[in-house]
Image 1 (tube, rainbow, N blue to C red):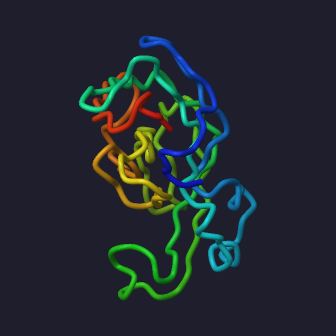
Image 2: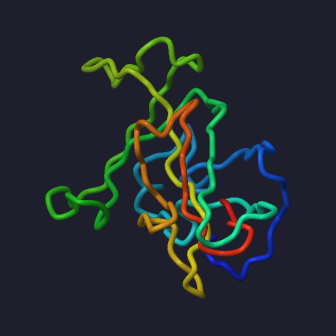
Image 3: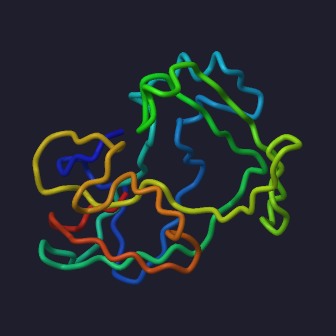
Length: 174
C-alpha cells in the first residue's frame, strides 16, 4: 500500500484516542522464520513497507502537528537481516543475496545471538509511520517524506512522542 491522500479512512478517531495496529511487518509476510535466501531473491517490492489505515483524526487540519505516542510492540520471537541485491546504500559493494534468521527472547531482556559470533542488544522501533502527504497521487512507503515515512530510527521506540506535520484534513495517519 502507498501513501495517498485520496484513500478513504479505515477508521475515525478523536484526539487522544488509542489505535492498535496488528500483524504488520516490513515484507507483508513474504519472509517467515523458515525463509531461505531464495525468498530474498523473489521479494515483491510492491508489498514492502506496508501501511495500515489511514486513520482520520477528527479536527486535525493542515498546519497542525499530530502527536503520536508509541505504547507497545508485540514481539514475534524471530527477525531477519538480509542483503537484498540492488537495494540500499551499499548495493554495489554487496551484489549477492544473503539472509540471516534471528531468534530472540520476546522480553528483549537477553541480547540476541548472531550465530556464535556476536550478541546483539535488542531495542524494537517503529520503521514506517506517518501521515498522508499533501501532494496528490500514490507515494512510495520506502523513502521518508516530509510527514513521516520509512524512517528506521532506532530511538523511535516505546514511550516516544513523535510530532508529525499535518498536511491534509484528518491527518490520515498510517
